[in-house]
Image (cartoon, rainbow, N blue to C red):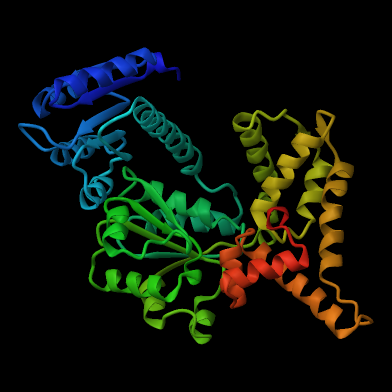
Length: 423
């Protein structure tokens, strides 16, 4: 979409600022309308829905926060950037909680204004594409996936935490998006948090969750403070106005046993549990998954279309897939990029999978003829590579699993010559 197709509404009670913003945006090719107060802004929005609203906090007839709340209740997908010369952290948090995509402080420079507009529109486009892509039904006609889809449709309607269990790459993220699309907060945002991005401020966490879907990936890796905060908010019903989805590839019961996870929090989370099977347990879905990933990569990544022969698909069905569906997706992408023919046969599949098998065998074998120091170093390398593979290359998560300080793990990885980007 070019700038000339984008309609922006500027709402500000100061005529000079209003016209300045209008001139700057029109010079960039945007269609721009202005409003001096809340009532005229309402009329403009009813006449033509803008792709973006720049909304001042302070206005004569109504404050911008109230107007933001009103616009977002009418259209939860509206993109709104707040502006203020007297902004506070509390106001910015409140605006974010109500759905504002950004908060720009005055005085506005041309660079600051244009960058804020560009980022807001980029995020809007990405969010629309992502939701459209990820909200589709999980792929597969096997009995396991069919049953999981039916269960997901039923439990998504209930206002209870949902726990997704499964190996890394098995499809927890896909099912989380499907639950979100089927749930009562599908008109809100899908907010994904990890152990590294989890906020330790109750006000900020509540703001992120309110009227949205909150998905916490690898909940077993949350630190003690994050677990305590989450348990407190659940117990006090301060996360009642949202959909809560948690995921873990590690046993929470085992984490409780070894003291790294609170038992009370476990009981709060596991009222509804869905277990995602590893790909090796539903290999009959592989042909359909192959076609899906070919369509995805050719459409969204602009890769050339290539046909997989029946023999090639059978070879894929007879592979163990330690990395599950995510590994299959990456293999399909690699084959589409590297293949020089329109048809991918069994030999190409074998060639693509073989290095992974060899490297896996090599990396998991200890040479017992080595001196103790060298054997220990070899074991540490195998062990840490395994932890990094478990966590998709996340050093923070791997450190948690290994019971190490992150800085210590970084030093150890450098000493062992392990590049996390190549894991």
